[in-house]
Length: 237
Length: 311
Image (tube, rainbow over all chains, first blue to last red; front, side, top):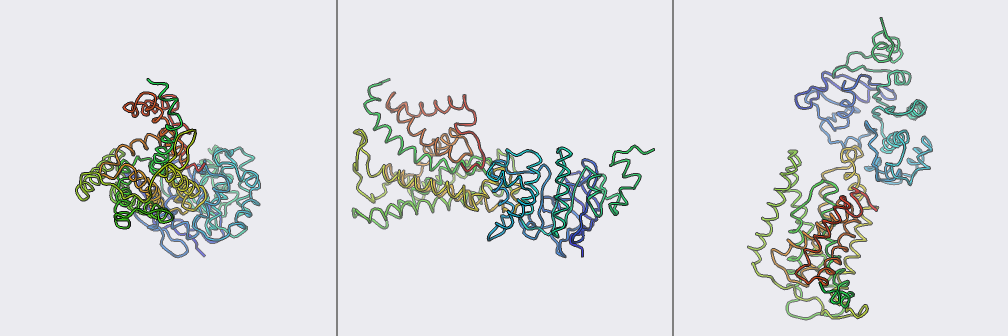
């Protein structure tokens, strides 16, 4: 079943066309990757889904409902959790408070949810009283993902979780992302690290200058000449 | 300079200074809260304060008339006056945000436009109060007979000072708890630290901003009533205390709630010490001089600009 559908999406920043004719489908239970260079429109796509950017054309459908006119604080309530680019941890709130912010629209006991995040990221439990701003980059990324999970999302948007992190930390985070998928959460992943993303994802879309130029199974794209040359850093002839 | 005037009156000046300081702290919270979420100085906050004074005046006038209450009735009347002042302040602050600021935010207006709008709203409100309520100061009927209750090293602490201290401490603790622990408080801090990300978490930014104005307005309006009890109520009453409270907020570190409390108390004490040392006419010179000196050494204020910080 299709959980998220982007139809002919066009987004502008002033005179600049950030996205054009973007069509993306994400089915329940999938991990889908959005690949592309800086400025290709990956982050804009996620921001449009979350309601932070407004499309001038096209629509965003989530679980069969049009959501592109909703403000961000309502979108999260529908079941879309967003771990934004640059992590955006609240620096002067404790780790626990950051997690509680993720569940801002939920009522009732959050104990089970925080325990679940702590079991995925044990280091966050150790640091739960520490201010978010004092964490390392990797820990902040874990907190950003954990915070997004606190909204109990059906769809998790991850924007460049590997950015600026050491290879070992990236390994850890990617293995946890596949753990999260096993619990039934659908994931839309934006990455510049195409090799890692394609190893993890079921399918992927390649964006260039705001347009989708390729869409296929991740395994197929891994073997695609053009993808290998442009995004996997292998010099093609 | 008269050092002996100062040393002989030290405890008197301290009591006076703390009473002034509590009022400054209550008003300063309003500036600092709004600055936290909008990076904007609400220069119409003086009129929030003034509206609290008038609300207290009208309510106590209606209730007390010409009688002279005492005992439990006095306590009830003080609570009533504070509640009325707070509600008027909260209401005016709410309207200010809706009418003077929100339309500008919607249109992404430049900073300067907010400043002009604030000054315009302030002029409008106090002139309207002057026209409707008269140009002369009026006295709030006394809810209690003020007199010395006890003394600290010979300095009398009057009923009025006790009322200020008790009610201000209660409200400041309440505010501190709200910001640190409640859902609204977390929303306020999140918006102050990163508004866009707060919205991704499900925080309705517009609502939080509105509630922030109201929260600051409640304290500012209550302060207006407490201030008016002593000095009377007049349409221009907000100007000087609010300017001082703004100074106190900057002194403590704008955006920092405990900074506003500390800055308020410190300013109240320092300016009364200054008045004791150099004479009353030097009072404002001393307080603003101190402000300039502190900012030269610590440009972000005593506790620093810790936006959205609870503690």
